[in-house]
Image (cartoon, rainbow, N blue to C red; front, side, top):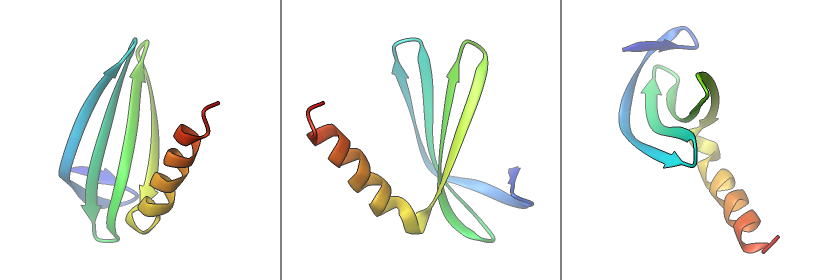
Amino acid sequence: MKREGGSRSRVVTSDKLQVENKTIYVDLKENDGGRFLQIAELSNDRRSTVVIPYSGLDLFLESIQKIKNSGV
């Protein structure tokens, strides 16, 4: 298990997406602090990561849906 924020985390479920030249990993993880979504992008040997607490998942999904539906 990897260490995230000082406590061990384990992957609950995960998915991997290939979009253009990017590989995106979407992992639902949990540790002593609870569950969280970790989204990591690997592109040109660079890795960027965003962590969203499980309590914020609905807001995050609503925001993505709003952007998608905006038609811009």
